[in-house]
Amino acid sequence: MRSLAVLISLFVISGCTTAVKMGERPPSSIENVDVKNYVLDEPTTAYVGDPVVVRKSYKAVVRKDLYKANNDFLLQGGLASTSLHLDAAAGDKFRVAGTNELGHPVLRIPGTIFMFGVDKNRQWDQTVMSPSFWTSPVGSGNQYTMSPADTTFTPVESRTPVSEAGYLNHELVFTGVGSNGLSLLYREYTFEDMARSAFKQELVYPKDTDEIRFRSYRLEVISVSPSELKYIVRSD
Image 1 (spheres, rainbow, N blue to C red):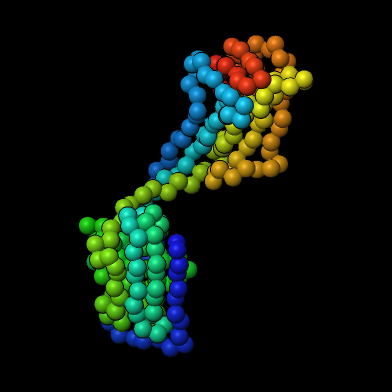
Image 2 (image 1 turned 135 degrees about the horizontal axis):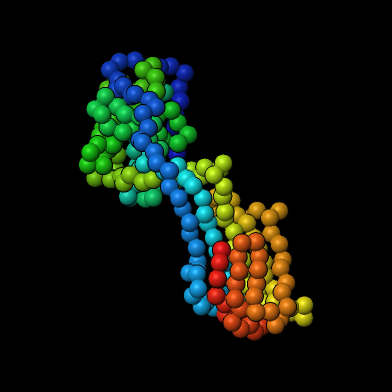
């Protein structure tokens, strides 16, 4: 989000507003995700610094509860306590908060109490509202403008890992061959792919080893040199 500003006053304007029905969320499903950078029993080459094994495996709750802006846009207007200035970039995502009286999904504007509706053509439906009648703008969205007027949004899925189902996000990196032998670095990551500094381990195997075993992985070593490792992942 490039910038977001909301002007707040100490008084509230009442009048004709748009109602919003909060809490109606799209149905969810459970999805098994297992992403690998390798194929079992297929010869592969890794150079120094390359990952030998990358694995991201988890169960996730999948919901279509986000909309992504397809272009940069500006939504602004309102009076006093309902004044709004939203400067958004293509790719910015907005979470579904409920539906309005037109039956359209309404999207939260981050950092504010306000929401705006999206119609069946995935364009702004000219409504702006808040969860409360007393803080919703008078006249619904006619105080506001969106430019460009043909701005569109695309529904996208959110994925939330189910922690109790187990979670893997790690890699083995080839770091070269030294006097002590063939070196690998094991690193774990969070769901957002951030490194967990407390979860890394340096591994060393004999230079002439024909097999690498670590946790559930078994790798057959085809050849190794100071600059590259040729191998086959036999089991994971």
